[in-house]
Structure formats: structure tokens, C-alpha cells
Amino acid sequence: MAKYFDVHPVDPQPRAIGQAVEILRSRGLIAYPTDSCFALGCSLDNPEGKERILRIRQLDDRHHFTLVCADFAQLGQFVHLDNSVFRAIKAVTPGPYTFILPATKEVPRRLLHPKKKTVGVRIPEHPVVRELLRALGEPILSSTLLMPDDEEPMTEGWEIKEQLDHVVDAVIDSGECGLEPTTVVDFSDGYPVVTRVGAGDPTPFE
Image (cartoon, rainbow, N blue to C red):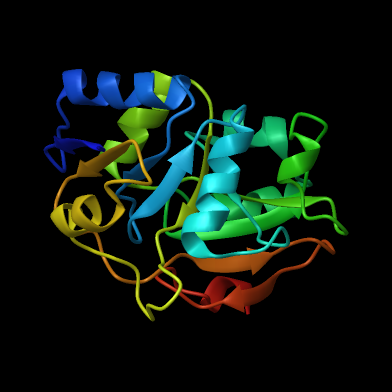
């Protein structure tokens, strides 16, 4: 059975955040709110967590996972950024965007796109995620909580707990957090290509 944490959306309780972080450090899988919609997340050193996400969402190995980062200092450890790309990303973060960028050697090979050697990164603007990342001290490997037969992500924490009770280790609920996934901008070739329009305004990258 998954643990259920009902946390305040603006000032999340440190005890609940601490318990969720311990689950992540113990190679658990959590469902948690972001500034776009709910997501599934695990620690970077958790190969089984990645496989569990793929099974839950019925995705193949070509799926682009996202490293959810606390800030640019953290993000810069895992992806290569030149000055122009840095400025373009900094102008819209934190916010509901995912950026596909060439990965550094800090990213485990199993998390890379098999051909492009890229990875998705984002810096969210949601108090609960920001507290999770602060307490964890490293990025969360993440994917939108969109079930195989659904057109929209799940939005209710209690419903996620009910449906995924047997396949995740914890559900963090801070109320509804939106239906739209992030806007995805691919910088693989050094210039922006909007590959998915979502919660973030795509105009700066078009």
C-alpha cells in the first residue's frame, strides 16, 4: 500500500516532506504534484524506479525522462548549456517547461536518449516540489502521470492513491495542480524546437 501525504500547497509540512524524501532515498517511487500536473518520480540511482514508471505508463525505452532540478546550479551539472541557451531558459524558469539538452557524463547512460545522448531537464515553480528537491539534495527522475488509456493526466491525489496503490510507494497530495503537462523545447541541435505545447507559453521559443 502506498503512503498518503496530505500536504499544504504553499507551506508543506517538513515532516511529510522528510518522509517522502526517505522513500525516494530508499529507492521508492512517488506520485507528486508539480506546477503543470502530477508526475511520477524516483531517485537517479534507482534503475528499478525507471522501469516501474515505464510499466505504469506502458512506454518503451525511447521515452525521454526528465530530471527535475532545484536550480541552475544543479541543472548545470547534468546538461551542457551555452550562453544563448542559458539565457533563453533562464528567462522562463522556474516554470512549466521541459528542455531537451545534451547530457553531461553525470547522467547515467540508462537515462539518456539512446541515439541523441540527450536528457530532459526542468526547474518547476511549485512549493511542494521545491521543498522535496531542497531536502533530497539532487534531481528527481520524473515523468508525467499520464495513464496509457487516458487523454489527460490524473489530477486528484485520492484518485491516484486509489488507482496506483499497488504500484507506487507514496502519493503526495496538495490539491489540484493542473491538467496540462509542460511545454517541451528541444535544444538538441543548439536552437529551440517546440515539440509539445503545454502549460508554458511557447512564444519565446517560436
